[in-house]
Amino acid sequence: MTYASSTIVGKQEWLQSASRATIALRNELLSRKWPTTSQVDELLGAGPGTAAEKRQQGALLGVWADHLQDFVHPLFQFQHGEINPFTTQLLAALAKIPGFTPVDDPGGWRRVFWLHGAIMALDNRVPAEVFGVDPQAVIAVARREAISDPNDW
Image 1 (cartoon, rainbow, N blue to C red):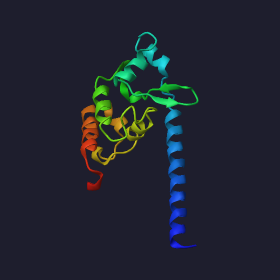
Image 2: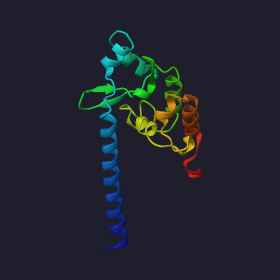
Image 3: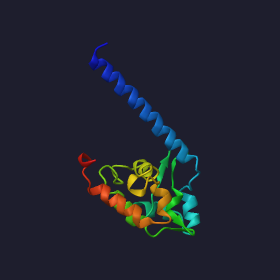
Image 4: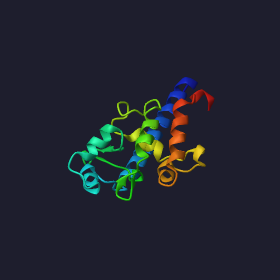
């Protein structure tokens, strides 16, 4: 085997490993039983379609769950039976990161993976866990990431 073919095999193994890790994280997050669209409508005490409207307005993040054929909504965005008022600012900041717009990420998974991964700028804490106690810190990190140059890392 030549160097070039061993490099290709190495890349293929890395991609397969990364794909398995992504699937495992998605499955772990889905196992948290986040509320569906109709459950969010009920939680908010609003009529049907409210959660979908909030998603379209950029005020609520949902991720597509194939097995339910519905969106589920990570709990970090809720506070006292309401949508955390900082959620809109967070989603707007995330939308400025390349590839994180609702058009680029219609299923919401890129944004949710970012929100559930440890971030050095948050002392290696998970943004979704920090958001409930310090939403401004999470928003600031998302804003910085949106304007940073990956070549500076």
